[in-house]
Amino acid sequence: FVNIIDNERIKRDISTINRDSVDCVIACMHWGIEYQRVPNQEQKSMARFLRSLGVDVIIGSHPHVVQDQDTITAADGRQVPVVYSLGNLVSNQRWENSNGGVMLLLDINRETKQLDLQFVPYYVHKGRLAGEGDPRHQNTANYYCIPTFDYINGRLPFILDETAVSELETFHQ
Image (cartoon, rainbow, N blue to C red):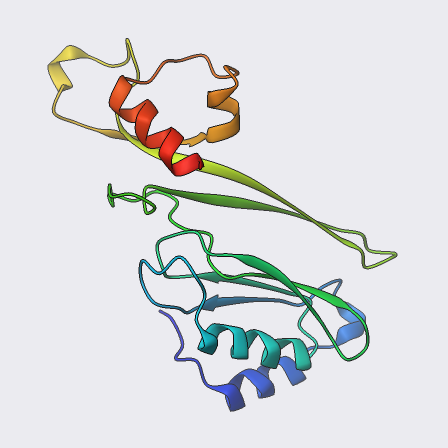
């Protein structure tokens, strides 16, 4: 279930947070236009609104493709990271730009409130890995989230077929 984006409700919900009892306020937004690789003005406006309410990190989903990440400055000088869309995690969407995403690793320092963000791009492989599986089940597919940097740099213990490698490399770019 996803709530409809309602600014008054969001404002009310955030105002109920006891700031002394949390390390960080993270807003996860289901927003944007599917398959658009650039955030739209509505997303950017909502990010500014969330920032004005004191949100510390904004993470978006829904477009099924990776969108930009940005940092916007709050009135009090805080730097608020915005990840407009992480893309797809496990998905049967096999077309270009929707066959992967990025994982966000977020480290929050409790004392300093310093945020450290790292992104791990991955490609979603649908199929089998070389030498895997029981030949009696050749019509079943598995899904693998393959970190693109690790695969490209030879740090994973398997080899993808030529088509999958081409798709992974295209997604990685």
